[in-house]
Image (cartoon, rainbow, N blue to C red):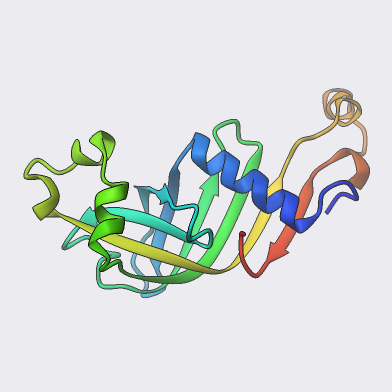
Length: 158
């Protein structure tokens, strides 16, 4: 990790990037492939990503899961480990439901299930290469750690 970014700063950048591009690849650790899903954030639960799915979606059965995130500009990456389970709080379901979610469920809320992905650990990379580093990439040179990126391993993202 670069000297100028603490793990907390990198985690805050992740949340900002996720708000800008709320898509992850997520899969249960049962051997099935990961799939792209849209996530919702709840500020009251910062270490949890919420995912609406069909009742028979492959993550709906719950369990240990891994998720990957790539920022819109390919300047931020994350690998998240945690547990998926159904969110049973109807108030949370209703608060996170919106037109973007409804577009995926022709019969409305009855077809949807809200899953929560409780993050137990995360590895985050911010790949904001400096101007000097970019020039070295163009003309063939070695980028040192002060010119490259931030990297953090965190037990949570809050």
